Amino acid sequence: MEFMSYRAIIDFAIEKEIEAASFYEEAAGNEAREETRKMFLDFAKEERKHQYLLENLDCTGECTLVTQDYKFKWIGDLRRSDLMVDIAWKKGMSYRDILLLAMKREEKALKLYNELRQQSETETAKNIFKILCQEEARHKLGLEKLFDEYMAQMGD
Image: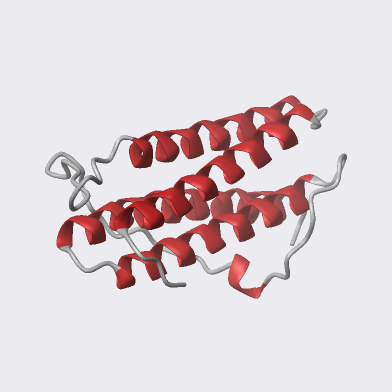
């Protein structure tokens, strides 16, 4: 991917966050199980926070963001989704498949933000995408743990 400006990068990332939030909101609206519906709504809320972060960047010159308060930390990766194939959302799909689908979506978002971070030319831009990488990695790890717990309950 090549972008002609920071604004183009940020606009692209905003589109991806809106897409992710919309997906989780739609999935929640179609889900009969309360626990799963709540999980989807929580994911949508997180993606909307990312959208807000990106929309409130000042990109008139170089993008600026106050990152002094953000705590960067390493987020582990169980790599469960790395071995999974993409599956499409279907109303009434199993909890296992919902987790697989969500893990794969978060994996793709993490890869995208890592690519954008590597393409960034300034530390500020790199930090913006580093924050988003960390957030997506946190989501992915949480889903991987849910998946492991579920599979253990199923005896696998």
